[in-house]
Image (cartoon, rainbow over the protein chains, first blue to last red):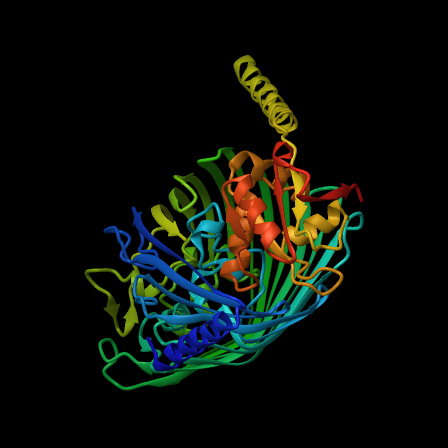
Length: 417
Length: 150
């Protein structure tokens, strides 16, 4: 744990002690821990899933206290492991002071969550959703640790009430960060087929995100629209294992904009969700003498149904579709755009995922989930997890062992307090 | 062809019956709740939308500026009826709603007690407190709130 996080924790405890002495406030402590297992029949999905992997866990510890009726401070520590992403390094998930001046205006200052879609702010918490793996068409695992929060500030509020419904809004502004152990770093390494490494933490430029949400009064429907923008430059250095001659390069994402439209209908124990996203950016990849400059546009969408049959059993299913390039849905031009991508397979241009999940609420603290995926397409896979075992590199080009059709099974046990 | 048609008809009938049962069960399993507040509270009545706003954490203070202290009921039947009637959520959806609030940093989990007696004790001894209990437990010295339709 870094020293500065310990310092923040001490500050919280000092505030708590002072408030206790004056008879005001108390520190609420809550947390969660989840341990999972994944097994795939083909292709490695973020971890060595072809052989089965327990490198799949999350844990969080949350402290909050009220300084006054309208002012609250809190923080949440978080650690996760997914293959070689995260590696259980403890990070500060969020920490901020929250002043709620009126129901229609509040402000948060610190490290605040990014409001994107229905699940981004809580994607680290397995217990608040039906599924183990969120639909990758909208909630890309590779960007999870970079898109989760910004260091800056946010404003929020709600207006309206029945019978017109309520309109809520959030806007955040600040800097995003991701370590060189993050999914984003691994994704950028994968763009070069693993021929290069990210050796520095990623530092995004000023980012903006916002969300508006309308809860309709009559039909139990929630509609939301959200946006995230950022720019990023990632320096790459050649991986000595594959390239004898040192190479340097970079990846630049300029004017990245992600839009998400969401609709959720809850009728008694039935939950229906549909979300659609598009992501556009001007991207430049330079490596040695090779380059790729393009306007990139991805699209993704999913529909899900979940039903709680009993207090202890909820079953859900979703169908998720993602296209790496909406003008090349069958991936036919993926390998021809640049010598940098010559090793890519067509099936990496899309991903279609049918998922079925059973969630068992053993009691209010323990949850077990079983989940199966039938997947067509390899857009969600990292190249560097799927080299051909016998000949991983030929003529300094990675050789991939990827199957177009594959299955994934996951099980997860969670404890929440 | 005939068998395929029969299977489709059976599936459609099953879905209709299933939806009807879901609606019927939720209408039948009703248990009343009564809202109680601290004796010093100025409120005598609240609307359903105000109750919803309070118990979903949107409203933090009373009209006189006093902090609202929520208390939830740990009894499953009472919680279920409250959540359905006043927040249009099932018990698990209501629970998940507050977990999302808490773990995203947007709020703190309200206090919860398992029995009417514990809730009465908390509400009567905490300024600004509001909770809900079964009507059978109400006594003359407990201050109740009248809930009006919007």
